[in-house]
Amino acid sequence: MKSYIIIYLDLVGYSKNNEPIQVALFKKFQKQIHHVLYDEIIQEKCILIPTGDGMIIGLEDDALNSYLLSLELVTDIIDWTKKNDVKVRSAIHTGEVNVLKDINRNNNIIGNTINDASRMLTGADDRAIIVSKTFYNKYLRKPNLIMGNKYDINDVYSFRLVDEDSVIDKHSYEHLVYNILIYKNQIEYGLGSKILNKFFTSIYSKDYPKKDNLQKRFINKVKSSKSLTLFGLYHPSTPMILQNIEINEFRYIEINIYYAGDNLKDVIENFFGSSTEKLDFTNKKKSQSEISTWAKKHPYAKNIKLKIFEYIEFYPFGFSMIDDGIKGKGFIHMSNYVPNVIPEETPYIEVEWKTHTMPPIYSFYHDYIKHNILLNKNINDINI
Image (cartoon, rainbow, N blue to C red; front, side, top):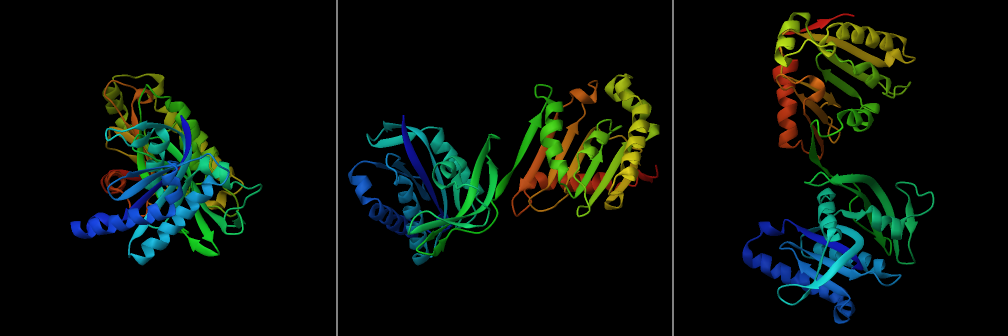
């Protein structure tokens, strides 16, 4: 195993060109990389892997200034893209890799560090420079660093931290990343925008700790939300959830809670094949009372807009919507009730998006819930 700095460069819009243009452009691209890394290539301290519309560059991390070469490469390639009317996204990571001979007897690098670098890139918009938390901690971290401030690296380079977030890959693994601006001789490189977290889903069943997820991940979403919609049977956990919302003189929240109507008692018990205490309608009355008391006695009650509804047509699922449709913050938690299995044991799915455009899977659930359920004539507004 060897320590390498991994630079992942992705040419934006490259594949939209016809083949002769692609070939000519990629030859120029390779030539420019060879120009910057000539000494490292000669000394075999660098491994280059074409990706079709970009390049993975591995630099041996064996010198104090190795990371400066990664900054030089990225800024040089950005200059090159400006002259060739293309854009590039960049991701920089560091870690242990395996170096081996590939089928063509050329040196190659494999391992999680390479995979992580490629997945980090999904958080980069056109022209953005994304660095991993590992790279940031090792080379860029400063004492008491403040987001948005500019910090010198040496006489040539400085940087500005634009955003800190995580990128969730297709396997639901989280990659902690930073979007940075690099300054080379006071010239700015990168993109001063938020990290583009792609949407992701999480599916929980009885094999996963549902209560732990409620206590941690879900409540963390609720804490700073501007709007909250809860659609369920009796909401025994709702009073606890509401108590975790951070409300003060500057923060308002709109809360809509939907309960099952009293007319559904027999339907619900028949569906779940049970009349246990967990399905007792007294839970609903208790929940409504606790919620009403919480809202009326809250120190900032004037900043709480609370509405209670009851539905009189049974739906085989419950759901929660946090920051309904707010770009970059939308979150849906959806329980799928299963016949003859009480709600605590049923699986649920969570859908989240942080892209600029609402993705199809989030859009589907969002529109279905809004138009087919919440606007249903069989839902009544009640006073408590």
